[in-house]
Length: 465
Image 1 (cartoon, rainbow, N blue to C red):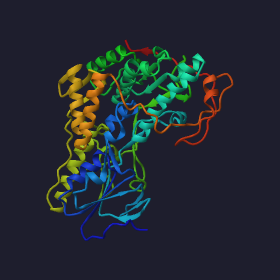
Image 2: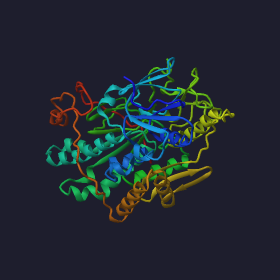
Image 3: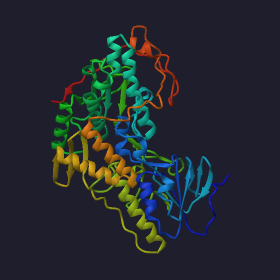
Image 4: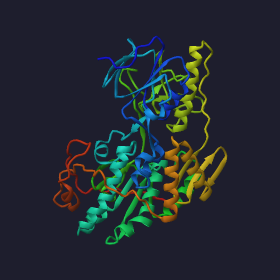
C-alpha cells in the first residue's frame, strides 16, 4: 500500500523524525522547490531538556510539546504523516512505514536517540528512562504512587525503599532530576505527606566517572557537586551499576543500596533505520561525511543524534545535544537548496555555544567559551535560554508563569496521578517484604517477569565531598 500523499514532479525529500533536527530542516526547506514529507511516530515535537520537570511535577506535558501540524500549518510544500518508519530500500529509493510505502529522491534520517542500557537486561526491564513524554509521565506517577504506598506500609524497610530514588548518570539530565527531587523533598512532600518522616527520603546520584557533569569543566563540576550536597543529594562517583532487581542495586564492589525506583540517564544510542547501512557504529550512529551524507549512499543523509561525523576537533563525533542537531539541520537545508540551484555546497562546522545545567532554585552552572558562571546569575541565564528555545508563545508564557509561581509559592501544582503507572515485579523473595508486598502489580509497557535475586550488596568507593 502506498502512503496517501499527492504525486508530484518535484523532488521529494523525506525526513524521518520530528525532533530538533527534523523540524529545523523542514523549516529551512520552506521555500525549496520540492515536496517535503515528514514522518514521526508522534504528532508533536517534544522539548526534551525540560522532560525532568514534567517527571517531577513542575510542568504539564503540553507546556513542553507542540503539535507538528500546527507548527507547519503555513508551510505549503510540507506534508506530515504520523507513522513509524520501519525500513528503507536504498536501491529502489523506497521508505516502508506502518501506513504504507513511499518513494523518495532524498532521505534524511533525523530519528534522534534512545536510552543506552549497555546491554544490561535487568536495568532495561526494571529502571525508568527519561527520553519522551510518556516516560516522564510514568516517572511522575511512580514517584507519587511510592509515597502513597509508603503511607500504607508498617514495614520500615519497605517504606524507606519506597522513599529512596537512585539516578544513574550525572550528566545534565541526572543532575537536574536529582536537584528537582531534592526540592520536592524540601518544599513540597512534607506538606503533602505530614504522616511520613520525609527526612528519611534518600536521593542517590550515581556516576561512573570521577565527577558530576563530566563533559563540563572541573570548576562547574565542583560547583554542581557542592550544590547537590547542600540539597541533600548523595553523590557516588567512580561507581558503575551492573545489575538491578528491585529494590537491590548491584555495583562494582560490595555494599548495599536499596531503592524501589531507579532512573537511568547514563547514556544514549542513535536510533537508526533498517536498510540504510549494513552495520552501525558502536553507539548505533550513522557515519556521515562533512556534508551529513551517509557513507556509501548518494542521496541519504543523517543529522543530529543519528549522525556520527568525525572531525579533527571531534574525532569520535559531535556531542549528542540539541545545538549540534539544529546546526547540522540548518547547514543541510542550505546545502540541499544549493544542490537544487547547482551551487557549491558548504561543509558543516560546529560552533559550540556553551553548556549549562541547573541544580535547583538559584543554582546552576553555565559555560560560554572561556566564561564561567554559577549561582543565581547562571540560573537566570539557564531559564532565559530554555524559554527562548521553546516552540510557541503560549508554551513560553505558560512555562514562565509556572516558574514564577513556583519560585514565590514554593509549590508545584501538577502533583496528579492521572495515569497510574503499573509494572510487574520480579517473583517475590520470601525474606524480602518489599518484593513480596509489590508482587501483584501488572505490567505497563514492559513484558515478562524475572526471577528475584538475593540481597545483593554494592560498594560506593568514593562519595562526593
